Image (cartoon, rainbow, N blue to C red; front, side, top):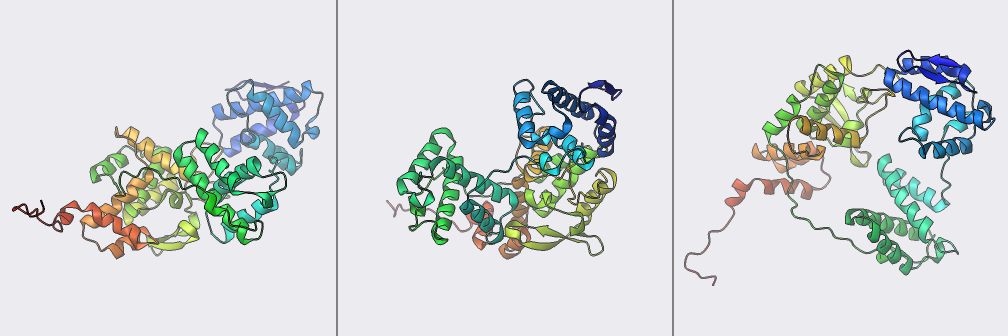
Length: 405
């Protein structure tokens, strides 16, 4: 029996015992803290004892066996019961030629051809970001799995579509039903255009309208942005990263996904500009102001882990190191609000703040739209309504003689 990790004192026996030292060295190389490494080693010990109890060796591992192990672990443990949790161990076993690469990958869902084509259409024709593609495909898959007639998708009727939306409304919030209906409408129209359906059933999708209290962009004050930045501890790796992220959001009006998608090679330090990978795969170059560039440099030089294969600028600060996604960027702002003692708000409020500040500085709407990279001038026009002082000059005085009565 091997005893590893002086801080964690993890005991590993069974088929994986001979691989412990190598895996521990890999965890150290990846930058795992002692606590995180201990959790990984305990997971390894559990898998090893599970294999031993079933009289199996490491070479017997298959995707199905791993899924069974994780399913059984989920009934006894509150964490580390997913393929993602096992990824460090499985990846190392693949690298060490102990198991085949296919074993380290979760089982892929077998989608019907029409859904595969729809996914390709969203990615190549609509040019949606991968997170949006997967969200739409997931909803379309849920519809197909639950409401496809025995004869196949060609037998779909309007009643099936309406029933799917009504069922969705029984267990989910209105905003979720609205998204489901939007995807369903897009998917059904696609099926009609490619010949999977001989009639357009998109019209059968019910329109879900949500209450809209205001269409006005709502930002935050300069003092709140200042407090948000000041709440970042710039003596720590997390603080340096959060400060740079908030600077990009507040000073340049980037979307959360645009910050998450920023890559090291996108920044042209020589010319003081960087590439923004925007919505709809529209790439544009923006100038990099000195204060924003200084914040990014401080993070890259003193806080970002030196992982050559990680090309995104912003990453996690704890192993396993990986790029940040849009939700993580959003969470940085929310956590910053709590540190600053403010009511939490999201990343997009900082984008609105920049738009409002430009309106207050009497920047033209065309220039505001260019900075915020709006596709539709109507979107930019919403910011004009924020300037209440100038709007009052357009209001007609109320007749004093009561002529309107």
